[in-house]
Amino acid sequence: MNAPVLVTDALLRKSLAAVRSLGAKGIPVYAADSTRFTPTGFSKHCAGRLLSPHPSEQPEDYAAWLVETAARMPGLVLLPMDEATVGITIAERERLAALSARFLQPDAEPFRRAADKYETVRAARELGMETPFTWMPQDEKELAAIAASEAFPLVIKPRHSSGSRGIRFVHNAEALGTAYREAAAGGPPPMIQQYIPPGERLDAAILVDAQGRLAASFVQREVRHYPADIGPSTVQESIAMPELAEQAAALLAKLGWRGIAEAEWMRDPRDGRLKLMEINPRYWNSLHLAIQSGVDFPYLHYRLSLGERVEPVTSYRIGQVTRNLLPGDLLRAISTGAWRGLDPPLLGKGGRPVEDDMLSWRDPMAAAGFGLACARYALDAGMWRKMFKR
Image (cartoon, rainbow, N blue to C red; front, side, top):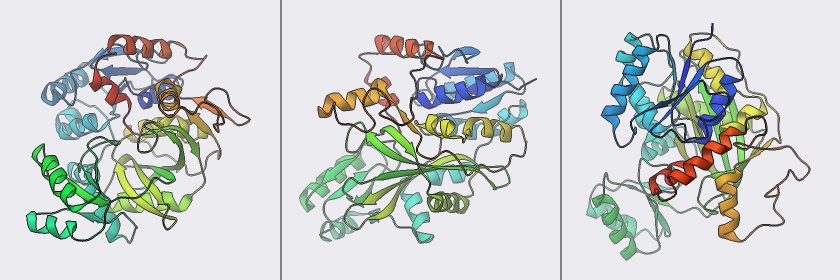
């Protein structure tokens, strides 16, 4: 009999992709979130909806709930989907393991370094990878030196964030000092990077087994985004770029990684070179594309969590396209006014294979769950921010 699985963060479309993948194989999958109104929970492939505390706002309560859930479901496989739930699973590793819960996650230190954008840049530079010029000023003197470098425009970034949240753009020395002090006053000191104009964005997803061996890799190109310039992707395409997967694997190996992660690059339009931007130490929201292209990360992750050995999956269908019409691509069209002449079109396939990562005649109730979530949380900015994570 297949071991049951707990998939967290059911509001997110990556969680829906994971539940559909596992449930279609006859694996009992339970979806958890702090709300019952989620696309994942309404999927026909979901065996049950679980209501949890909010992992970011109530981490101690969530940890207790997770341990209690594992105690009620012996042999449960844990598939945490987002950064907060991954971090709590890692922190509770010993208690969960004592309850016979199974999971494949990195140790605390590799997770901390991968989640820290500055530590990621440092590790990448040590491997000879190109990144934006990055500074971490320790005092006002170092901040003044950056201001005098004439490297503007600059970007002030939180060391821990997702997507474009918390980012500030500055164009002169006076603005840098003011914006940096404001950002530092609101939390941990941020980092400063040289601004790279918007360019092609590429992502490499990697799954590493418990012994540090590569289990799967996949590379995609981001086609459209919302917000249009700096937001998460709303349309993605699978591409062949094994050298990027190799770089991602090397970077994660340097960190001592285990489990799933995704690395992001952007092509600098000034010199045409790819620059590593960050690591997402978790599943990414466009997971559906990898599954549709032939790299079933959730199922491979499930098998590895059970201690099975899998043959590495590094080849897949090229040119596969997925789209997030609701709400991402539709909001992009509304905000930019670009409704026609899109490739692929906003609606339809346009001559090549395109699949929506939520809308499906084979699983229509997921869209109903999304609609209920929108109605219930229409005025809740926090819920909308969560849906627009990378």
